[in-house]
Length: 515
Image (cartoon, rainbow, N blue to C red; front, side, top):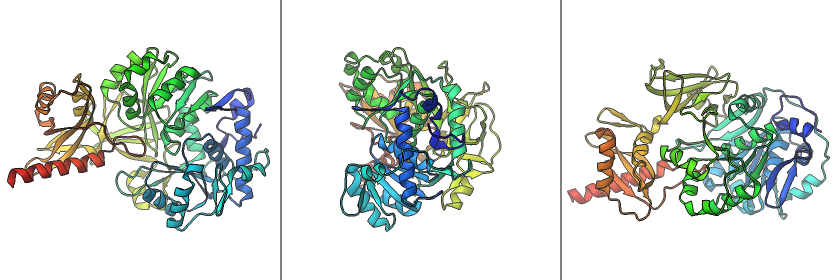
């Protein structure tokens, strides 16, 4: 077994290696790795990085689709005290190139099917050498299998401190360029350990993960399971039928993902008659607000499951729905939370304000971005840009992003609250509300709606439904019916794309009226 310092994120699953070394840690297709095998393979990767000249603090870039060897590299790099830079393969080449140029990476490891993309982005960035590729060899490439095979199984020498940076995770860049969040070994270990009591996970749990491994939603789900000694079923990608089939085949007890993933599952109700989901006891949600309709419908399809909504960001977390499934979110132990106004004064109960979080897991800074660091991360506090409402009982409800809030005629409109009302209509499957400019009101809401079959609902009918259940000032001035909502690389609804589309539709409509 590897030596454990207690401060190195690379040895996150050391307890399971010591107590249940032969238990399966990772399952992907026909591959099943025990904790002992994962431990030894991570050691080998750490040794390979050291042999390639990687030193403490050097950046190691991982550009993978969902492959268990990503996790070997992830934990191996951490054991070498390198800084892991995970890159979501769903990002555009332009964004990947920016990250490669910005992160100061020393080496890039990638999946076989991403080699050509990686090489193109590396050339454009003008940095990083070499490229280590899974199942590939050739000019400019180092074969991963050959590279690792030459290394020892023994753990590398410890060469870092608990305050060292472990991960440089890039935000999605919804406003401007992606920012590299600097997360420490001790902070990430604290976060995992502090959430375990609220998550109610045990070594008997099996989680299924289909989100991209380059995104925090997926790695966070994996780390918490490995920490408690459970097992992870890794899917190459998300597909509703193969996902439910894997749940039934492996006896999965925890699902995890963004709301859009659950929307796609619930859009295929016939699949739940083919696959047994009774093993699932928790459905974890993260990365975006959970529509109220999903919370109402989930028990029908996962009859033994409780919904567990989590709130966090790349920079910090976490607030979690209590184990008993009661509504609202509560902070994990050791977390200070403020809900503040624009002037930084504290909000009263039930008043909407920005949530700020302080705990040991908060990002230390943004890499090479002192302006953003000064704006968002100060004195250990992370100012999230998210709007919440806190009740007098200490429960928190996320209502949206500050950037997404719509001010119409002096009234604040929160998109999630409008979406929740629209989704009460039995013919509405999904809804997303964005703002468009208005010559008198300043901004007004526009709704994009996905209908259920037979898709007979009209725009006037849905507007009338909203006015019967919601505030008149918040009603969508236009309802645009679409077949599907566009998703960003992390799997969230792409509000920027919808906002641009709404502006175009409204502008063209106004031009026809005045033309």
